[in-house]
Length: 121
Image (cartoon, rainbow, N blue to C red):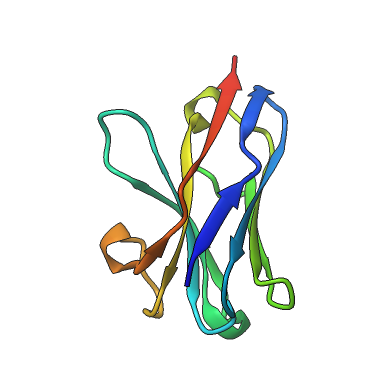
């Protein structure tokens, strides 16, 4: 499956953005995740959505502010980000996994190209 992430941009602290991740194939069979990365740091787990609507799990740093959702008919996953903070600034990646539940980037098989989110304070 090929993934393409988009929707990043510059936003003020406290603002919102919605990222999208469009897939070339069916998403319903995949664990879908969002990760983010800043220069010099490892890719960090943000949120993931289990297949078949079996639930979501969030990093503590974004819980209550970010929401993942998917539209299987459009083969698209979304990341709604509210109340953004300067520390949310990063390149955001969507990813697909054949696994069931993982926060490790090593368990994800396919990756989008990344989209930059910059939050100004």
